[in-house]
Length: 113
Image (cartoon, rainbow, N blue to C red):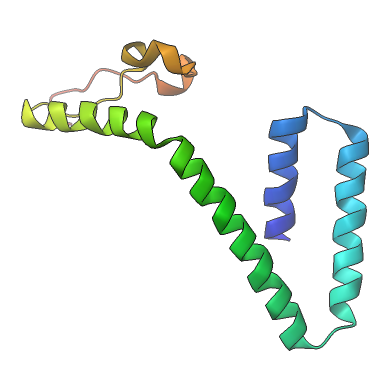
């Protein structure tokens, strides 16, 4: 169920509510559940291992593509730490990255922080 949830959220992010794609994903999920119910447990776990391996490859590719951005953000973090300030992500410094600024809004720290 959790993997289905993740898959549907990913489709929602990339396809912007394409009903045919969602219905196809749902039919594929039901077919895999039916197939898994008729297989022995070793086959099901082997299939799950292969699919998780593919997911890992996709994640590694995403990490490779985001390497430069990640290094920029980490460098900013390290500079703030070296300056002795509480590190805060400032989306305005990375205006070229098309960051949702509302998601990174924060209240000014108080004396208690």
